[in-house]
Image 1 (cartoon, rainbow, N blue to C red):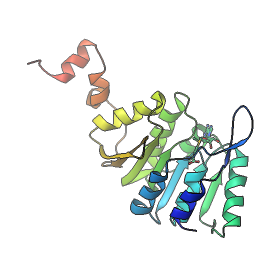
Image 2 (tube, protein in one colour):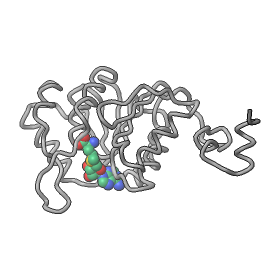
Image 3 (cartoon, rainbow, N blue to C red):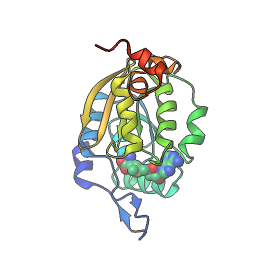
Length: 210
Ligand SMILES: C[S@@+](CC[C@H](N)C(=O)[O-])C[C@H]1O[C@@H](n2cnc3c(N)ncnc32)[C@H](O)[C@@H]1O
């Protein structure tokens, strides 16, 4: 199956919270196209799972999805089986991302997608650990930046020296390239934090007013 065929299919791999009916809750098709163009065949990881997982698999990535909901795993594997998609390079970790990501070694992955639990502060936890496991020059995708808990990551990265903004992919996914592997420390070096703080110290970090 090609990525275009996957995009034409839009499989319903999730369940509506209220009715339990199958729903499509996937990333925008442009994200799959971006992965195909920019990441094909690397080591990749995402929080949450579904349509994006199948996209990574079809693109030839050695892919890990971290998601506590095993029915999503079963739906992904069932879809792949029906369409003859090889899943031997796919690992589904049935765990909450906040429990699993801290166990991973640093700088192992070429691309990471934040798209698991969206309730604050889980996207922040995902961002912290996924940025740590990314290699330098690796790509970080943050989905659903129309939701505040995800948008704040995009705003932070946009101002940060260690990340290059690539663009907004589709309607609501931000893409960044990691420039350096550094321990996060020192809020005074974080331009987004300083610019949004009103303490005298923050004003000092901003420098003299003109
Ligand atoms: C918006 S959906 C992900 C969509 C997926 N990227 C796709 O393209 O289909 C959010 C996912 O997060 C999963 N999830 C919920 N809580 C989670 C947690 N604590 N850690 C990881 N995943 C979680 C849900 O099972 C669901 O698969």
